[in-house]
Image (tube, rainbow, N blue to C red):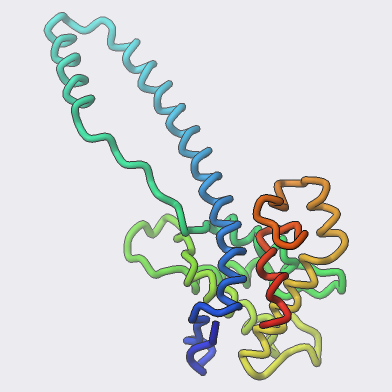
Length: 232
């Protein structure tokens, strides 16, 4: 992976190198959580809708014979129509999942007591990184993989700047160094004994042994990140 652009407002992580691959697995971890959450929400909404339809049909039992026949024909026509395709959330992560990523990788707090970002800053960075859409203004847009990489880079720029939350002497000038500092923070956070212990206890599905590598617990999708960290 490489950073394109020198203006901090226009920089992007691009390419298919070690950095991109390691961050991709982390993104896919939270993307799968998002898909699972949306499936549960839509199942619940469907159940509520079916109950509402059932109540409505019971209330219309006193229709005249001709009206009932017409309703039957209408339902038959509806069944013959095309079934609405289920939304596809593959390759996307929602706001809740990205904020959970920030929490899991200790961006809001750390053992040193210094937070990289506030929740307000993280929310602003999320909206700045999300694909711009002119419709659905009432809906917070999701992040795709490229937007997530932009989110990571923007986090580094904000956190490790003089105006950020870091203490004096902990900010960096070059964007590459800011990104490396953030990745180091993430690596320390996910490999802290407390994070490993929490994963072993099976809290909130924090690890995935199926996708682990070389004994790594793949805590929050970090197996590839840990394996390649020292090559970044």
